[in-house]
Image (cartoon, rainbow, N blue to C red; front, side):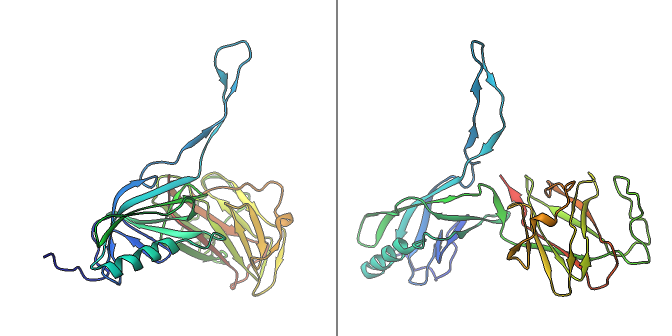
Length: 291
């Protein structure tokens, strides 16, 4: 007779965790959840390509391609220590992602990295009884954002450049900070394989802040006066500019501004404003991204 494995035991990797359920582990009641087939997580998402046929000519007019939502299907076998545990396990699986009004993080622990996608249930959870203590299962979820992100939220913060050094104007690119500059710069790393879109948070007091990509010269510039305690939240993925994360201030973004991503490898950032205040802070939040 095979000995029961302890709750929390990892059976194999990857481990799939979502809304209190975990595949390839042993749960609190001793049920072993074996994922024997996975589709949609390791492979890239489907591609949307809309081409228009060239009238009375061969071929089509070219057009950009875009990633479709990521559809993930997990199939496997649950092995319970007894019939009652089996029936309870079936009930728990049926309740996973029952709240269809919001997205949940699907966290996948792989041998080399822990990543996640925000998902919701997109198909019926299937259960097929086998012998007394086992059943086969299938769960399908969809991530509207097809990218896979690091489970860890990465954060970096800097003040404005002090009077001891910093940026000299007019700016030339790529920027050279020199040896005496303090503050006003960030080096952001993206260890994934595709560009990520960071969220910037500018904490007041601050007047007319500017965030600069030092490699390209692209910048996000804002004509706004932030009081002490006020925070301007700039979401480069959603293309929103919110005061205190609530009230839209997109109108304060200057016309020459350009949305720029955190590319593969990383970027260097310069931060400046109309006047120096030691309490001013720029914070970057991002997750490394994979296709």
